[in-house]
Length: 236
Length: 89
Image 1: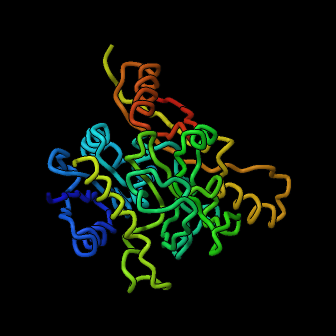
Image 2: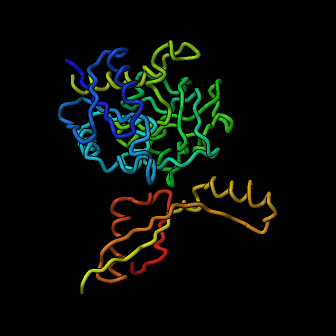
């Protein structure tokens, strides 16, 4: 079976081709770049909302894209149990579309932060983390100005195991110093109740090949390998 | 009643529970440092000036309110929306 993944391109997406490259050339599945108005969910096993500045971040990051027809298609996909991941601007779109709880606010520093960070795995039951272990400390870069995670319902998130990643230091300790943007509880990624939708601010597609990592790591690959494993399990 | 043109002015701002580093920076790093230490708080936000056709001021306000809620012009998780003013164009 050929696994087909759609990478949705919005006006202003800029991590779309990196994601296509990793899926096609590193992971070895059939990934297609699909313009947001042309996306038809029935043709795909999963989809990625890539990073960038969809619609120029106008009004709020992700809000205009959240009204795109592609989001209605992604909603059908999720209901059907297929996996959908939003990376960086993709996460902002997924929260604005209310597929994921919470919202992303301007970084506390008011600066665009672009650096390698560590994130600790808090939930390895999702469609994108099944190849990880709880407590794994992944090296992965971030690049955003609006990544401060905020929710008015933290307790529910904790109770439902929807917090998937937290920013940590190199030792895997979740500290205030390791929090790059002021996110509540150091939250770097959250999932939906069904655990087939993940949003995270860090960029796994930039951390999937040794040549790109200052530490020769390929932790980003685990996200896509988990996604493929999830698709294989649900279709077998 | 014939429709006429109105202007509805809207402000979006973060809820009190959502920190506003822009407002804090203006207050602490500019105003307080320049001697305006009587300024106790600044909150930043976004301002929208919307022109529309409606039959009355009330109608104009209702249309904008409905639109902002329906299309999430403000994010109810983090923001409040205030209609500042409705006037004839």
